[in-house]
Image 1 (cartoon, rainbow, N blue to C red):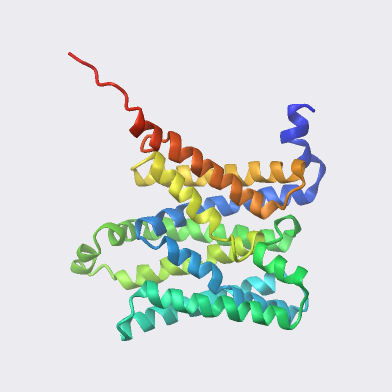
Image 2: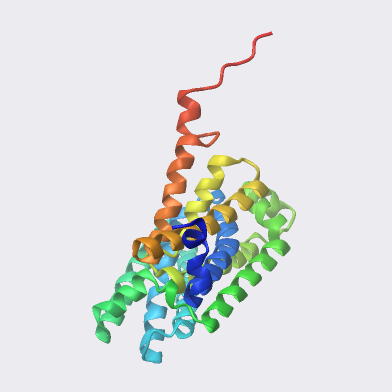
Length: 290
């Protein structure tokens, strides 16, 4: 088997592989930078909670469409995710609960409700598709939707980049200069939900956050500069998508979990060999002596 057969032939021969690869590239471009900001804001687990919160809306979209319509499920997931984000914010501001606690409560209820809705009218196979995604079944309308979400994400991030960075590192300063921190916080949550909806269509609710947080963690191990972290997160996410699709094709494995396991493997290698990894701490370079 030649290098062409391994790395290029699956995409040259099959349209569904090409569409899956383009979807992975779009998800990497959009989810990578969002994951970096989630990590900097110490909201990594909230990203996981939000990925589960889209399930009831996706399940209702599935029931309304009568089939695995990614468009209907995506719209339902967007509405459900935004609803949970807004309700969690309201509860945290009107009660003694912190925002992470209210997020956790809503996402657990959302996950259970979504599974119940799907189980009312569907088989176990349908439920597996919703939970683990169908990236090889991405069609042209769904691909256009994912691409639109990615383009919107990059555009909004470019516009709110400076105040978003200020809110991450010094929210007090942003309030002092009248920077409208809550507005940027809401816009950021909107981007999180949009990218989780896009990832959900490809990877399912249980792994939608994988291409968001694993590349961000990889980037933090390799760099301390925010622009570099965003670039590294995008590169590692797209590399995980490409290598995961190649591995799933040749080894006949489920594509979604294989992509996430590829990202997890890159994360494990980064833990060992990155500049701030274990190997550098165990075997530090000797200092030069004058």
